[in-house]
Image (cartoon, rainbow, N blue to C red; front, side):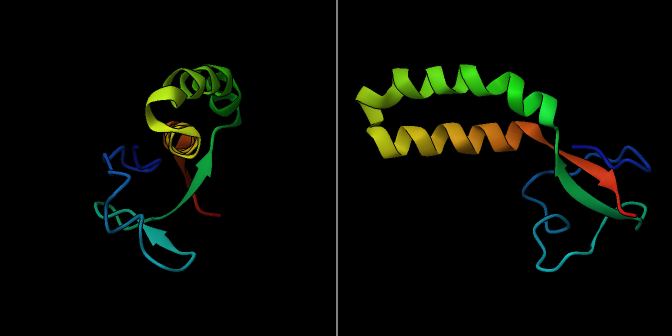
Length: 84
């Protein structure tokens, strides 16, 4: 993901995004950012990931395949926005 202010690449697992509390700041420019979900990507990726969960279910089990598809869906549809 990239900072909406300075285009600095921020990892999903970085300390800046995984802090407790509402206010998050870009480690490069220091501006306030917030994590949101892109609804278009969420809808677009929903069906392929359900199919993936069904295909992987015999190998991993029902709960694990569902969890894998939900985590993938959420991580692919996250983006950063300017905090208002």
